[in-house]
Length: 175
Image 1 (cartoon, rainbow, N blue to C red):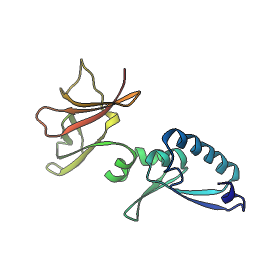
Image 2: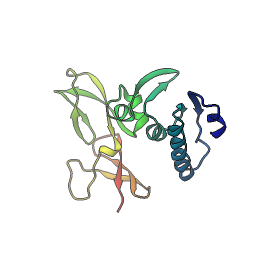
Image 3: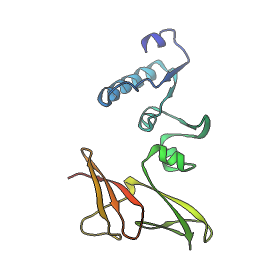
Image 4: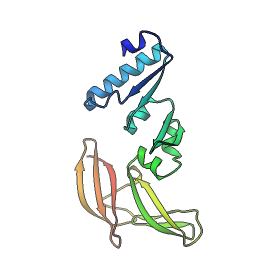
């Protein structure tokens, strides 16, 4: 990095610069790299396939698929207002269900969600796994735990919902 910045370039291209590092080392090297880049005031274009890395590092993100530009914006804009299912799924794990819009709603295995389409139109409902709450005692939909994976402060849980072929995934706080 120092050698690249020595001639004081206006633009620096970094292609997967942190891909070979383990997660702990990656966090510290990434933070140090950002500090050096800010201090040098060079514009950096960083290529990555890691959504978290893009969100942590970028002032602006250009999301590409098959060599075509899908969406540009800040991390917050791309996360909160994705232009399509690919963009939404790139920045967050999703539960995706094919269903039919009826009376302004789409039926999913864990309840109805708003679907602003004409009646009878086939739609895809996508719900982030972090937006699903689970409780042993209360809830609108009963489900059976199919698998449970401990991830430290979170657990990844897969549920089977009665009267549905789909399984629902959720991240739940551990403890």
